[in-house]
Length: 313
Image 1 (cartoon, rainbow, N blue to C red):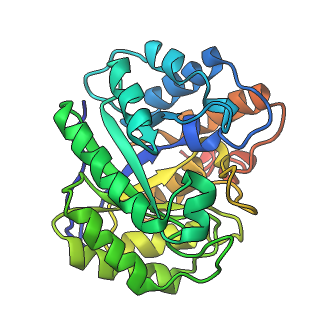
Image 2 (cartoon, helix red, strand yellow; image 1 turned 135 degrees about the horizontal axis):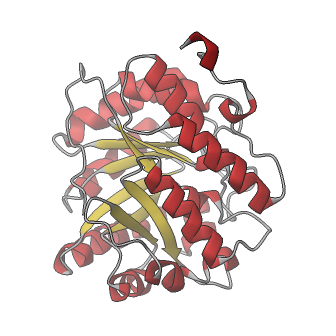
C-alpha cells in the first residue's frame, strides 16, 4: 500500500491525486459498465501514474446498481504494493464487506453536513453520519487498514441550501477525534466558489492539523478547477478527480460530474505543481473510455489539441 502525502507545507510544489472514476465517476451513469471495463479503467489509470484509487463502493446494490460488482472488481485488482485501493463505505455492513475482500487498503467514510441530505443518502441524521464515520475509521484500523472521512455537501445542500462554515468546522473537529488518515471537504453538488473554498480549507486545515485536508469538487457550475486551485493555495495537498469528468450522486438532485483528472493535471502541471501523472496517458484513456460509455466525456483537455504541439518540442 502506498504511503499518502501528508505534508502541509504551503510552499510545496506537489499534490497527491486520488482517482475516483471507477466509483464516483460511474455510480450515477445509466449504462451498466462491465466488471472487465472497470478493471481496465483501473489498469490504465495505474499506468498513467495513479497511486490512490477508489475501486468501488460497498453499498446496497438495489440503491446503486452500478456498484453491484464491488467484490468482483476487488477480486480482479492488480497486485501492486505501491498502490492504495480505497473502498467507499457508508456503514458497518459496507465496511465489513470491504474488509472481507482482502484487497481494499483504505476505507472511505462519509459524513453529511445536513440532515436532509444525510437522510436521503444514508438514512440517518448528520450527527449520526459523523458517529458512523468515526466507527468506520476505527474498524479500518482494527483490520490493519487506514481510514479516511469525507464531509459531503460541505459547500451546499440540494435540500437545505446554504451550509454554515461553522457546521463544517464542528464536524471536522468531531471526525478528527477518530484520527483518520485525512478529512475531505466535498462540494457534492458543485455550488462552491473559490473565496469560500479558500476560507473553509484554511479554517479546517488549521483546526485539525496535522491531519491533512483532501478536497473533492464537482464542476456542475463551471467553478471546479477554480475551486481546486483555491484549495491547493489554501493548503489542501490531496485532490480527488475523475477520469473524463464523469460523476454524480444518485441521491443529490442536480449533482453533475467531478472535476476531470486530465483538466486538473493540466492546470497544476502547467503551474509548476507536480501531480505524478502522465497527461498523455490520461487523454488516451479518456478516448478509450468514451468508446466504452458511447459518448464524449466532459473533460476539456482531451477535446483540445495537445499543447505544446509535438512540432514545438
